[in-house]
Length: 378
Image 1 (cartoon, rainbow, N blue to C red):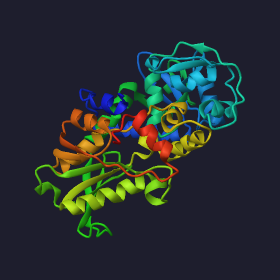
Image 2 (image 1 turned 60 degrees about the horizontal axis):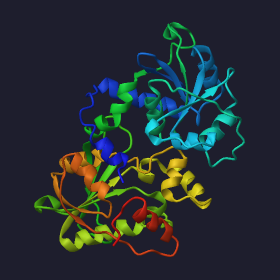
Image 3 (image 1 turned 90 degrees about the vertical axis):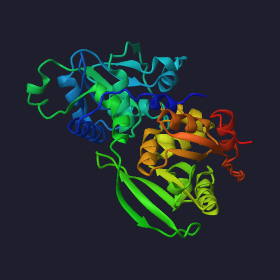
Image 4 (image 1 turned 30 degrees about the vertical axis):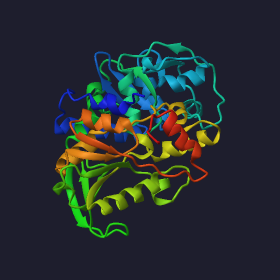
């Protein structure tokens, strides 16, 4: 199956962002997490705020500065559940009409979050704005539920006392941000860190221009000295890696990969801060709640409004190049990881299987990986 891993990896022609524009996007993400509206600059500018974090003041700003009807934007998969109808994913974004004054905060939160009790009014579907996909992208960059309240912003909004402090960011910059940020990753720290399964391991920390989340590389031996070193791309899993959760196979995969590299005399494990296939820890826990209600891991992500896999493999490619590892053997069962890295210019000379036995709890999870994600588990 084709996932956003390979789709986003193709987006290498996006415009380069200056440092100032990158910082503006990072500020925009922080505002979204605080529930403060921002303005997306397009031909028809929008004032935008996430439904998950909006408060009374945010709704007042939408009412004062918005012109025309406000709308609730969400992914087709979430909108389909609310409307009780099938919606094709190719539509990318669906808009629901919001009456003025804006609907109460509790109802907006319930519309955004399917894990909450669903007592919702009837919503009418309307046409989404041109920059609707960028508005959803902002919610995802903030690791929030992708449900956004938007309205056309009034002309002269920045000159008003209630609009003077709002941040405006070009919609195109939001869409380019993930790829551009990956290109700014730099090594910021390196230390010997003897591990139980690899006494000669080193830890290399990477940080991007936004000074935000750090990504780590665990180097076993000297992988750069090998013609095709063994590499594992491992997305962080707080529940599996740290707590030993039996719901997934992440912890055993992490430990087994390091042991395999030690046995081969070297390798590199990239530990990426992309929890829950890129949806973040809180949303992963919400997905677990939906799984407990009968959904599998793929459908649970989609029910929250996310794609099956939201990871950005430009980050992994940038780290590998910085480590001098652009010709590798990849320790994975996931063909999409290979496609994603190769689309970013990394040569994957071979795939090395990395299959963990089921434990009686994660049997359904592993079955979903094989049947719905296309993992090669045989």
